Image 1 (cartoon, rainbow, N blue to C red):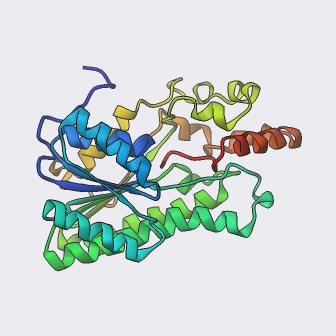
Image 2 (tube, rainbow, N blue to C red):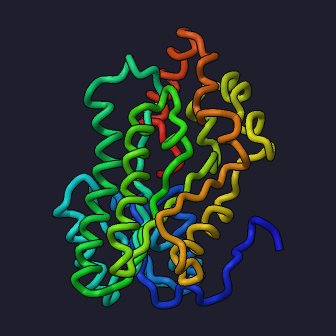
Length: 297
C-alpha cells in the first residue's frame, strides 16, 4: 500500500450523492473519480459544459459510476438552485457538497484592477456561501444530515503576498466553515475543510512561470518533504471527510501540504521577483489564455 492508492474500503460512499464544484478538471476531477470508485453518485459543475461532459464520459467509462455534468456559475444563486434540483431529480437526494471552484491571480496587488479582485472574491467566497446556504436550506428542510467540504488553503490564516484576493476570500470561507459547523450541528450537518499545498497538474507551474523562474521557485525546493502532493492523497482525505468514518469531526481544517506552511505564506517567496520578472510572468499568464489557477480548480 502506498500514498498513491485509495485508502478507504470499497463501498465507503455507496449511494451517497455528492456535488463537486469545479469538478471538470484538476483536483475536482481527481476527487470525483475516487468518490465514484467508492460507490458515490457525482454531480460535477462549472461554467464550461463541454469540459464537464468530456470528464463525465471519461469518469463513467473508468469507474462504471453515475455522473451528472451540469453547467453552473457559482456566483448565480438561481443556477445553484437548478443544480440541486436536477441532482435530486436524477439521484433522489444530495448528501454532500465539495466547494472546490476557485480562481487566482498571482500578481503584485497594486497592479490588479477592482474587477480582477472581484472576480476572485466572487468565485471563491460568494460562490462558496451561495452554494452552502442553498444546500443547507435543502438539508434542513428535508432533515438530511449532509456534509460540506471546503477546499481552502494555508494562507487563509497565515496570509500571503501576491495572492491577496484569494487569501481574503479563503479566510472568509474558513470562518464560514467553523461558524456554520457550530450553528448547524444541531441538524446533524457537518462542515470541514482541507488546506492543500501544491497538488499540480502536469505542466501547470511551467505554464505560469517562464522556464528559468519555474526552476528557481520549484515547490520541491521549499517543501520539507521535498515533493508536491499526489492527487490521490487529497482524494483520500476528502473521501474520509465526506464519509461516515468522520462522523464526529466538524468545524475542522486539515492541512495537507508536506510541511510547506512551516516555511511561511505559500507565495511569500515571490518577494524575490524583480519588476522585470513580473513583466515576464504577466506575459506568460496571458499566453496561457486564462487567469492563473490555484489549488482549488
